Each structure stands twice: as C-alpha cells, then as structure tokens.
Image (cartoon, rainbow, N blue to C red; front, side, top):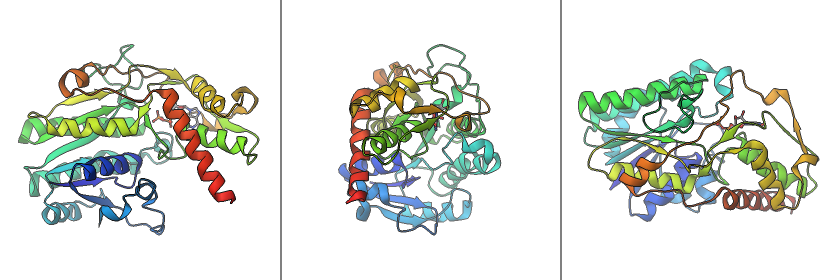
Length: 325
Ligand code: GDP
C-alpha cells in the first residue's frame, strides 16, 4: 500500500507516517520548498523515521505538480493535512490562508479526481468550524459558525470534500478533529507554549510566560491517538464525516495548572495576561461528542490530558537541557 501525506512535516504528518510505516505502508510526503531544509524533517527525526519517508517537492497551491505527484506516486490513500494551521495568523494572512487551507484542499481533490480517483481521500477538517457554538456539545450534526479566516477556509474545504464524495463518488472523508497536541505541537499553539514556558521557568531560562485569554475552553486530545482515527476512516467501506474528540473540556488556566504543577510550580506566579495574544474574535469553548467515531470506527481517545501534559513538559525539559549542555 502506498500513501501520500500533505503536511507530512507537521505534527499529525509525523505521527501518521509513524503509524502507517508500522503497518507496512510506503509513505510519500509532500514538502514545500524552504530555505530551512535542514530543520524541515525535525518532527520525523524526533520519531526516528526521517529516512523512511519519501519526500516529494510540491505545494498545495500548485495543481499541476499535485496531478503529476498523483501520477508518479499512485497512492492508495491520500491524507490532506497541509494547511496554514494557526488561527491567530489567519487574520494577518486571510488570503494566503484561503488559498492554502481552502483552495489547497480542492487542488488535492481535483488531482485525485483527475489522476487517481480510486484513491481514498482524508480531509483534515477542524472543530474550529463550530466557532460560535450552536450546541453545547458538538457532533457531526451541529451547525457550523466559523469565527476566523482559518475556520472559514476549513469550512469550504469540508463542504468541497462532501461535494466531491456526492458528485464524483470519491471515497472522501472529513475528520472533524478537536484540538490535538503532543511534544511535536508547534510552539505557537497554547499547550506547547505553556509546556515550553513551564520548562524554561523551571530551568531558570525565563521568569514569566505571557498568554492571552485564559478562560478559553478546549477539548484537548493526543495527536498520536487522533491519527488512528484518520486511518480508520479510510478503512471503512463507505466514506463519511466524523467528530474526533475526548468529550472533556478544560480552560487554558486549568491546562496551565497541570503543566506548571508537573514541575512543582504554581502557574499563578508566572503566567501574565498580555492583550497581544488576544484574538479579534474568540472561540470561547469547544466540546466534542465522539459517539459516532466510537460506534462506527471503534475509536476512542486513550491519553488523558494529565498524561499528555506531563509528556509534553518532560519533552520540553529534555530539549532545553540538551541545548544547555
Ligand atoms: P486553536 O483552538 O486552534 O486556536 O488553538 P490554540 O492553541 O492556538 O488556541 C487555543 C485557545 O487558547 C484559544 O482560545 C486562544 O485564544 C487561547 N490562548 C490563550 N493564550 C494564548 C496564547 O498565548 N497563544 C495561543 N496560541 N492561544 C492562546
């Protein structure tokens, strides 16, 4: 079996590659050309699989290159994980976010339709699409209300995936994944910013941590668990859309308490609120209902928030100690 993953250098791309290599897949990853080529496979290296993934030059905005990639790689499964994925940056770069996160997904769908229609397709949909929540617990049936250029772009990609499934009979599925984290999470996302901050303060490398809205609530799971749900969706006979979540929601404040508590510190002494990290429009609370994923895929989140935060803080302590040596 051959698989093509866009966004292979990101958090989920790395964990999904690890999962699929373990299942005997030949893994091809689409990589955007960058001057920082030496650090691009950092996450794959962290998992010890850097040499095992075939890197293919490409870009979600370049349809002809995507078509040629489909012709060359001949994937059985295609996972579209590539995106401008940071919500806050999407107000600064709304058009780029639309082009990469929205149109980019349709470019991949087009490339599949034209050059590899038998491939199964996974779209990384997002809980951010629920935005200003219309129901206290969000399921596949909850109406969407996107609150950022990122969420609006993801919503377009989501409906285009549904549309290509219904119009052309593609085996195309959306995973509506709630926030998922790990030691490989980008440093700008709040969980990793907090675990990195707690580690720095513990080691005497920093004295405070500046954050935005501490009252925001998220349903946080572990990326390693969530990539399993992606794979399971593509093993089903019929394509469909699934919420992937833990069913528990926690404030940023409580998440800080967990991270700092893991190294014996009281977060209240170190965390400062800085308006620079507030957003023009906030998603106050997200809480997913993973019942369908459990019933149909047999999937459920395995890692607790406590275990995950401890793993992330320990990884950041390890990183900083290695640099200090
Ligand atoms: P998102 O849910 O995809 O936007 O994931 P993030 O990890 O970027 O943000 C999660 C929540 O944490 C949002 O409601 C943010 O407003 C809130 N938050 C509070 N302080 C910060 C911060 O300093 N950085 C980030 N990224 N988010 C913060």
